[in-house]
Image (cartoon, rainbow, N blue to C red; front, side):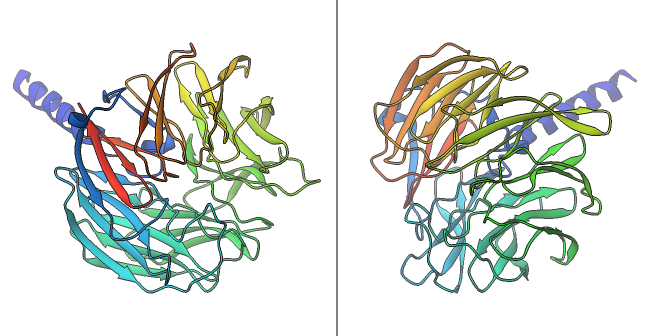
Length: 403
């Protein structure tokens, strides 16, 4: 019995160790953006383990499974998309495949490769959208194409940027757009559509869903915050919490804080909203709302009892996650723009400024800027953390930083 117990505990330790190495979707496990790994605060030359020139450009974030890193790239001249796998050990490009795609207009701050892939132990799933076709392409981790799904045109002048997630045997993507919209789940093994939930969206949406008490949570300007049954796509509840009198867009992704679901929406030059909901009977009730100095693009970060709202101009607000009471709002940079989202490593907060400065703050609820690490290259992505390293994707380069 003792031997069996020891073997069982050893298996748990090994499993947890392996699990901790993975950063499988946008902002890691369930989009929480948190790692226990220790990453250097101030980066010296010795902290750069490797630097790799990517096959093409883009803003999408990297994901990690074991010793492999996956990301999407694109040629700005002809819009061809390249799916790539990079070695986490030395930065070598292990495999890449290029897909021809239609060229289309996009916002000057967007790119043809702004979505983040999702990965599980068997396959990695890439998404890109054009005015002709939304495409999901699945590859084995060794680089063999498993399947490709074509899901109809994408309408929206700012260009595509939605990212898939994997839940059990489903690949799920938010297909809210300016035209015919839906939430889509594909069979992870075959690419066949398992369910397609029609929506009345009026704006192209970039937020990535999260899991909450067995439900899928989506945010959208028109629909507000929605809970979906992942088994069949049925709407379990929906609460419209964003005003409809002026056009807004959901870009930052929802997060979970205990029994709260927290979602965001807004418009770049107008009011923006962070709203927290909690179950009450069969309904969801609004618990708190913050509408001053909140982000439009970056996703909020929950760290301990506090939620950190890192807005697009570098003003960071720290509030109590349970009550929404604001502790402080401080400027992290004198001037700058932020298109990526904050992540945390060993209790410290990291966020990439658009010109390539990785800003580091304390994460214990006290405001203090610890460092600015300048990569000197445009960066609109969100770092990934795994294997004791932080992987930062700039417009043309992938970096590995560790102790």
